[in-house]
Length: 449
Image (cartoon, rainbow, N blue to C red):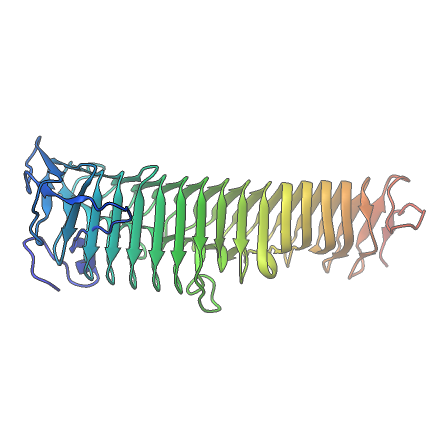
């Protein structure tokens, strides 16, 4: 680690407090290099960085209860040094261009022993190149990081992150209204709760811009903290990399939530796996698109409860769209399309369908309930225990082993209803509804011997 007048941490904490800044230019006319009138503004004062020449290559700005403002048209270029570092009720705003070319340094950074006191705002461009670097970084509790419309964060290298709310304190708010681009193995877009599993957590992440990550095991939004986060997406999140067969650990995902939480998606989430959840229950509301290129669109691992409400598009890349595990899971299909099978796994699960279309449903072991009042299951409904159909259409039904119930007062079954064990009750109470396509006969009440 390079020498610096700032506090430097030992690995892995060393990376969180080693801070650096840099700028790459994407304009036809290069901005003028900037200089700052105060590199250590105290409480109540402002450091302004504009396009005056020159700025020394090791310059940095450290604000303690102060304010830092990089003006439009200026560029701070730093090598092996720290950039805008705020602490203890400080604010840093970048309206210019910031460039960093160094390993294990960061751009806009925040540190504080207090909660909710620091703010980082990017309205310009921050571009970093180097292993383990971050464009925006915080080790302060409940920091606010915002990337506004028209702004850019770009990081290149191994283990880099565009927006990193690091470790212990957690509870920050990360907002992206601009463009985030990362390239490299494990190069993440936003990283709430950083690299410390079991840290504070409960962050809020809002994306209405673009997050585009490329590289093996690179995720659009990833949290390794075992506590729930809240993610709201109305923009685009794309993870273009691959990874190993274990979706949670290796495959590049649009969103990874190790502690579960809440995901409200009205935009697009795509990756080798779309959304990966573990170690905590989750609620997913999708009115946009969630897609897995190579694996599931949504996968949950462990004995956790997952609730999914869909009116958009969910598409899996290997024949399975949704796979949940051993919790008590609920799927509410109120519209849209699901391409690939929905596998609810073991546990006491419910599936409710009022509209839309799904390829097939497998409810797994446990006393499961399927309720349909509209929409279509193109293929099979498998491993259901209690089935109520008042309208809609399914290809065929294969009840689970046990004394189960298939109660149909409307709708259509294209082929067969199969009961695997004695004691199952199959009933239809309307002449208008047929058990088999083209049979011309109503399905009557039957109890298997």
